[in-house]
Image 1 (spheres, helix red, strand yellow):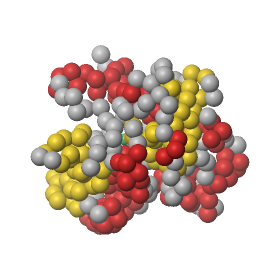
Image 2: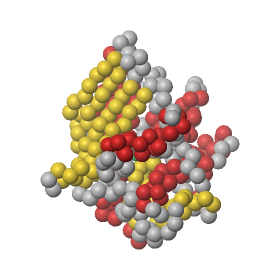
Image 3: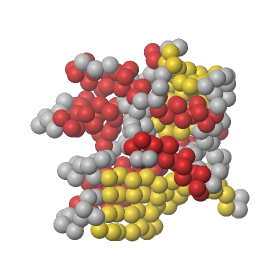
Amino acid sequence: MKLRELGEFGLIERLKEILYSSLIGDDTAPVKLGEHTLLLTTDTMNEGVHFLKEWSPESIGWKAISVNVSDVVANGGEPLWALISLSLPPELETKWIERLYIGIKRACEFYKCEVVGGNIAKLEKLSISVALVGKTQRFVGRSGAKPGDSLFVSGTLGDAKAGLELLLMKKENYEPFEAALIERFARPTARIDYVKHIVKYANASMDISDGLVADAHHLAKRSGVKIEIDSSKLPLSKELKLFCEKYNKSPTEYALFGGEDYQLLFTHPKTRWNPFLDMTEIGRVTEGEGVFVDGEKIEPKGWRHF
Ligand SMILES: [Mg+2]
């Protein structure tokens, strides 16, 4: 069978059978070491797939760290140490790599973690892999959602997809709201401000990298529950609304299916809503299976690797 037919998640299932580890299946792997729970995760960004070489190397470096921190945060952890593996073409300007590392350093300072090593190899195209270790007081994964919980997201949804589309338009001048959307795609910020809330209150949590509906499917499946989303409650930024007006798009579509926002999707009782965080209740967890938007069953449609 070709990888294209099996798909990313089919492949992960096959590999889990070979490796036989119960720790596979969340944003991070929670490993116990004495009294501590460490969170391990890794993520790769490839030229031509996740970024183009002409984009700002500082932003690419920032994002490479942020997407890994996002997974650690989603599981209720704080990042500690990172390893970076680079694959580089020999004719690449060294200045480019230095600028990449300035972005990496800024992100590490922001999230209070440290790059402690890595590896460099030769390849025709650029590839940046980050492996990150974090720690948590209480691991919160995808499998704990309970019927009766409310469903929440942090921040706003759909901005990154709009930002990517704007970036690919390669316009000479962008309006301020367009620049803001591009920034949200190119320099996402992991929601480290949510760690305490997730650890204290969440029954289930993950970050939204593939798109709300696709990721809600993962949560529903792992928790053995049904997830109901009210599309009228989706948090939309004013920038996304302006974008959709200008380009005649549906903001709801962007919020439901756009990926790479790196916001958090989590569940807990309604009463735990925190007015000091930018969280929005967008639906609920009930008995059953699948993901429903406004009462209608909806299949995953988001980012697909293969
Ligand atoms: Mg994730």
